[in-house]
Structures are given as C-alpha cells and as structure tokens.
Length: 341
Image (cartoon, rainbow, N blue to C red; front, side, top):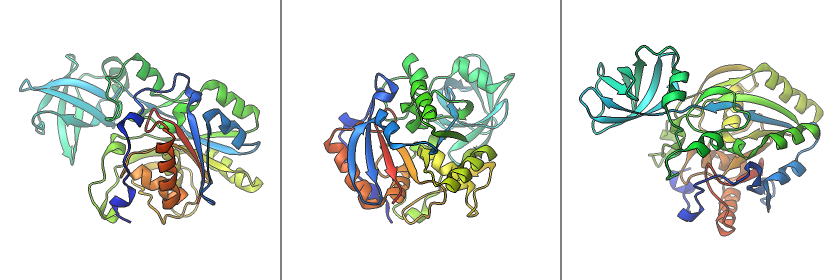
C-alpha cells in the first residue's frame, strides 16, 4: 500500500490539547474488525467488555523529562530532546539549533552541565554529560515533559502528572503510551476484582513515533528503533490465557509492537532487544486478539498498524464516524477498542 491510502482530513478543533478532567471519563469507540460494526460509549464501559480470565497487557514505561535547553560553545541557543539514554552519562539526542553542532563541540545544558558531542548518527547526536552521576536525576531536575508537537501549550505541572500512566515504572520513554493514560487506579482495581489478569511489557517510546513517513512506497520506510522487554511472566500469562480460551488485549500500539517483536520467530519468547517492526496491512498477527488505542495522526505508522489490525476499510469508516461524532484525537484524546480483523 502507499502513503496516501492513510490520509484523512481532521478539523483542528478535534485535536485534544488537554486530557479529560478525570482519566477514565473519556469516550470509547468500539470497532469489531470481524463485522465492521461500530458502537459509541464511555471509557468506563470497557469494564463491561472484559471478563474473568481475560488478559490485558500494559506498557509500564515511564516518560522522562527529555526536553532540555542550553547553549552551544559559540553562544547560540539549542533545544535538546533526549531520544534514548545509553549510559549514566551518555544519551542519544535530537538538537534543534540554527546550525547543527559539530562532533567534538560542547553544549552547556541548563546553565549547569557541560555536554560533549561524541558522534552523529543520522538525525541524532550521541552526547556525553560531564560530571553527571545519573542522567535520570539530572533530567528530573532540569528537563521538561516532551509534549507531542501537536499540543500547542508549554508543558506545565498538569502535564507532568497526566502525560504519564498511573502504573509507569521503568524510566526511558520520551513519549507516553497514550492508551494507558485513560486508566486510573480505581479502574485497575476493579479490573482485577472482575478476574481480569494484568501483565506488563516495557517499550520505551521514542520521539520518532511523531516523525512523518516521507516516502510514498511504504516498503521504503525505515522505522526508528525502540528498546523493549517482554518478561517471562507475561509470556506465561499469554500461554495460560490461550490454554483457557481467554482473550488477550494489548493496551496500546506500543504493547502490541513489543509482543509482536518478541514473536518474530513465530513463537513468543521472553527477552529484550531493539525493534524496528513496521506493521502494515497484510501483517499476520501472532499474539493479540484485541487492541485498545487512541486515534492516530494521518499518514502515521500507528494508523497503518491499526489498519492492519482492524482492516483498512473498517478503520476509514471508524475515523469518519469519530470525526462526525466529534471524538477527541491524539495523545490526550479518546480511545478505541478494536477486535482483530
């Protein structure tokens, strides 16, 4: 398929600029990928669509304060966006400046720490922070939440709290696994009380998730790399769900990509690694029966993944319906529950 197959017009007013006042108070569009049927509801009604023994898999990555301000040794201002933490003092970053820094040059970050540019890797730079004992502590003290480019306000205290899932545990993401933003602690307790099994994977979402696809022929697109971890306990939970005939739901496209990456050899295996898995229509899913996700950007790899899972025509119809019904789109927006095509 080609890039133009995944385009649609979205009124700017439907791009959510702030989350719902209560996490679980958003709307939920249910799409049955088998029949194409659509039904409107509220997110809390998800509780009525899962039952005892069903398995839900959450991405427990934690968003770091990845956006930093600084100056080059020449005096020019720079904005640094951490893409990945490589070591306690080394990171892979994007640098926004009037002119790209040279390898060997130094940046002064947050008026407090010098950083040396070690290498350039395509659009990224490898940078070492001098006299920095722990990069995560430094980011927490001096960084800001890296909100997506379509959110127009600067990150504030509300974003620090709400652009993070309540179950976030492993620091490393620079974008939130947004399907999980709808869950509050009370809803997670209720799911467990209903007998729903909860398991976790980790996939550190990179800033590349917002990068546009720049080629018309999708076979030429190169996905950005993201680190994931699928623990043995989660593999065991999936195998047990399969054995008892229960449904397996991925909470978010990131959870789904982690699981499908771990099943690349046709058998799901526990482990860690980097994934560049690009899922487009025609992909044979191996692990997940149901997907909970937000509404995604036009021409994005995430829209392509959802179209592969639910069927291209089904997703087109669902998005037209969502626009007509004025669902809220993107990271702070409403959610979809999809049964696999």
